[in-house]
Amino acid sequence: MKSKLALLACCLALLSSCGQDSKNTGKAPEFAVIAVETTTANLTNSYPATIKGKQDVEIRPMVSGFITKLHVDEGSVVRKGQVLFSIDPVQYQAAVNSAKAAVETAKAAVNTQELTVNNKRTLNQKNIISDFDLQMAENQLAQTKAQLAQAEAQLVNAKNNLSYTSVTSPSDGVVGTIPYRVGSLVSPSTATPLTTVADISEMYACFSMTERQLLSQIREGGSIKEILEKMPDVQLELIDGTMYADSGRVETISGVIDQTTGSVTMRALFPNNHNVLRSGSTGKVVFPNPMENVIMIPQSATTEVQDKKFVFVLQSDNTLKNTEVKVFKLDDGKYYYVTSGLKAGDQIVIEGVQNLKDGQTISPITPAEKEAEYQKALQDQKEGNIQTAFN
Image (tube, rainbow, N blue to C red; front, side, top):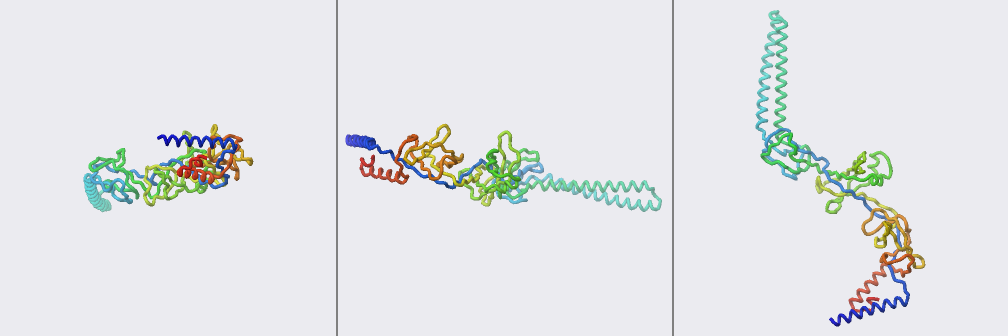
C-alpha cells in the first residue's frame, strides 16, 4: 500500500512539474485541426408508414347457416376460386329441389294450356266459340308461361344460394385471421367478416408528409403524373431497422391537404416476391436526399449557443476565430452538413472546442499526429515510463 501511495505522489509531482514547464516555455497548447472539403452527402428523409396488401378483401357469407368445414387456416396462401368455408347446405339443397318441382309443374301447366289454346283456335275458326273465349284461353296461356318463368327464376336463385354455401376466395392472396370455427352461425348481416384475403404479391406503404416536406420533394411543378415520374425510387425500412431489399415507387399523392394535420397522404408500391411484407405491419418510407458540394464536419467540432452552431476556424497566425455556421436540417448523428459559414480549405479545430476561446492561440496538429501521441502515451504507461506518459 505504501509503495502505491509513493508511486501516486511521484506521478502528481511529475504532472505538476510538466505543467510548470509548459507555463515557463509559453508553448501554445496543441489541438487537432482538419481542412474542410466539399463532398457529396447521401442523406435521407423517412416517414412512418403502414403496410397494406394491394387488395385486402373481406370475406363475408352470402347466406345464413352453420359453418360445417374450414378448408384453410390462418396464413394459408390461396388462389382465386379456392373454397375457404363450407356452410350447411341442407336447407338450400331442399330449396333447389322444391324449385325444380315448381318448374316442372309450371311446364306441365304451360303444355296443358297450349293444347287448350290450339283446340279453341280450331273451334273459333269454325265459329263454334267466340273470339272472347279464345282470347281468355290465350291470356291463361300467357299467365302459365309467366308462372313458369317465375319458377325458373326461383330455381336460379335457389341454385345460387346453394353455391354460396361454398365460400370461395375472390382473388389470390393470404388468409388473415379466422374468428369463426366449425359450428359457428354466420349470416350476411354478421358484423365481423369470416376472414380477409390479402393480395400480397405487391404491397402498398401508406404514409403522410407535411406540405413543406412535399414542396421540398416537388422542386418543379407539373401534372400529378409528371410529378410522380420525377420522384426518385424510395426504400422501405422495416420495423427491425433493416432495409427492405427491393425499392418502390410513389404511386399516388392526395390532391387535398388535411387542414387538421397539415399533411398530405401518399402511397408507395413495393414488390413482394418473397412474401416478406405482411398486411398491417409498419415501417418507414425512405426518400433519398443527396447533396452535392457540401462541407461535412464532425459534430464534435461544434459548440451551440442559443440554437446557433459555431466552429473555431484557424487563422494564419494560429489564432482561432469563433465562426457561426448554418447546417442542413438532416444529419446522420455523427456529422453536420454545412450550408454556409465555411468554405473549402478552411481549417477547424475538431477536439476540445468547449474549452477554447475566440482569439486564443494554439499549436495545430493533424488528427494522425494526435492519435500517434495518444498511442505513445498509452505505450509509455504500459512500460512504466511515467514522465513521458504524462508529458
